[in-house]
Image 1 (tube, rainbow, N blue to C red):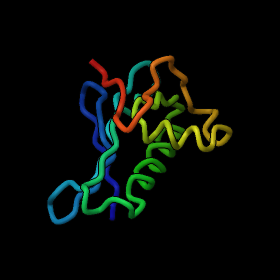
Image 2: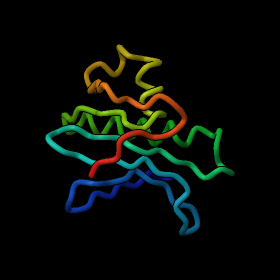
Image 3: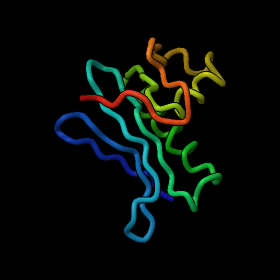
Image 4: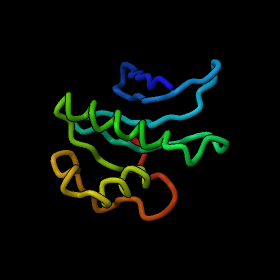
Length: 110
């Protein structure tokens, strides 16, 4: 599965995977002032548990580091990954008072 990247003129984008012409997974983000707000990660129900979200996460981390972006983990999945290995992501993690605290993604950009 090939991870693709798209970013629009408003600096909103996605790392995503398509299969047979259908998008099956995505990690959505917005960039402002060198901060990448990772606000949603989704994988189609029938493909959950195969490590696909983790691959999207790894690609986002690699991209953020290559651009010297900080990451605001508004998505609870991204936040959980950061919390499991805080030292590994200390160079990226922008901490926020309103970090998500459940199974849902957090603050979407305006």
